[in-house]
Image (tube, rainbow, N blue to C red; front, side):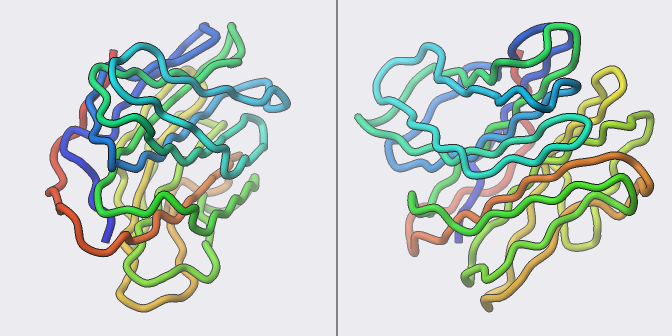
Length: 224
């Protein structure tokens, strides 16, 4: 199944700026990426994503889904052409210059470049969660949550692992993952708390490539 590379996800934040960037990272030409971007307020403004710097290959980002509430969350699939990349940054822009912004980037081995299923949800009640329908066996789900009420730590549900959380003024942005069971089906991920907040969540299934190098999860790599 897909395996998240050591030192990922890479995280970047912005408060009162128009963009957020990860720190530099290196990639193999066979790696597959998922990026999560979030902003609050101004949910009507689409976020952009670009590769900044780096030598070697090129990352092509494809927008997979968008969730809108009081803020905006987007999720992209990234593929690499031209071989390995050294020292790349990922920048998410078009954020409100007086608001908050967030970017998280996962790099994975043993993953397909073909897009998997994706889903979104938003509400002003209950805990932030979403169900991804008709997932394949041995996939990995990745999600990004924007809690636009703020002031409460996000608590992942029993099937979900929280990889990162940032408090940015009046909003919490976080990224989560869950490894699917060997069978195909519908799978949920997200938070068990807080509830009764205003939130939006985006999720993407990363498909198993079959074989390849499996790397163990390690600690977070936090960008500058």
